Length: 126
Image (cartoon, rainbow, N blue to C red; front, side):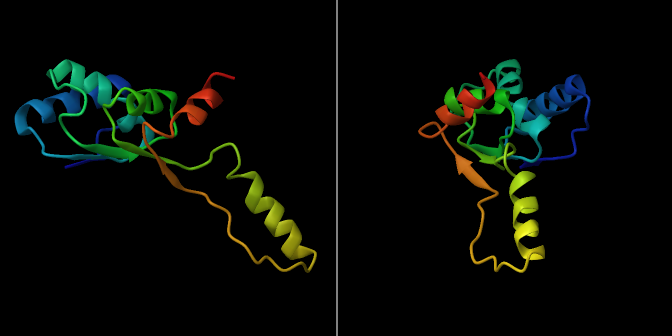
């Protein structure tokens, strides 16, 4: 099951996701979007689903999602390096405009799980 059309209203997202959980008992979930992924723990709590019962992966650029990864409600989440993703392309374009070759890649997407979530949580606590 992929949750992606839940809307933008936080209460509506949680209501739609909870209704779906109760009616369909999905075997796995892909949470597309930060608002959806951030709501997984609340939905599971509301539907009586314990952490780890249903495998979940999804977006992970929110403190709520990182906390859900740490507590086992989400198995892995996508981190887009939001603190650097705007700066690094501009720096590379500046080098290219000056005639410099760009011979390397910059990571702009990575998955994290419970074993690697702590640095992300530290960013949110600054």
